Image (cartoon, rainbow, N blue to C red; front, side):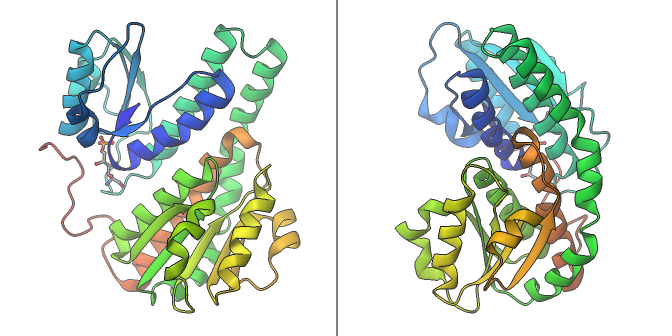
Length: 313
Ligand code: M6R
């Protein structure tokens, strides 16, 4: 799976779905690096390219490399008549509608939804999941609109926290499992539209270096849904608080009841089935960036130095 920017982070989330649910090994890479590694391509390889615009030069070049090597090319694109769509063997439109803001938001959640559905469909077609499991996943996917609406109701809470985040110079986002790419996405959105330096790390990697950055000036956003990794995320969060780090914890109410002691701020998220949790947690990641940009007075729609579609390598 190859893409750039936010589309790459959608691929990164999908890697968790494909490996866990479909049991297919997946490589993900940013397009600008992938091609120059000259990766060997084994027969039977399918290459998936994800792009909102379908015109990103690095992604298109990587697609052409894989097509020349004989891979089957599948693309997930929002602009159905784009170059990437035209040069693919198979196209899955993401149907997000025209996205005008430079920061990719609804395109990201639509890409995730298409990729989750694709993983579930392939798993079922391969017989890796049975009919009951398949129906269970489809039911989960059908919960997305309701849970996104619920997640959007945290608006006021996010607005309040954003006023505090807007004064920070550096912000760290932490997540485990599929929340790790979401942590990177939260950081990317924040950098892009509020111009605050932010980094997303896997929570467990903190102790291998980034923990040295923690002090009372650095807010740390912890994405910790109530899943199998919750306890480990909480333990990483406590390491941050023990070093005077200001933790903003995002979890469902049950998670907050269990772990919010000592945090700087909390945001209560709806409890969601594991499959769609990354899609639901994209909402606070985007809202945090948006309200921080509004608080700072930056242009959230047309951030400086950025183009909607990057058509040069
Ligand atoms: O059009 P694409 O999805 O191929 O664009 C890829 C990236 O340039 C894009 O996601 C970029 O990172 C966004 N500005 C992020 O919000």
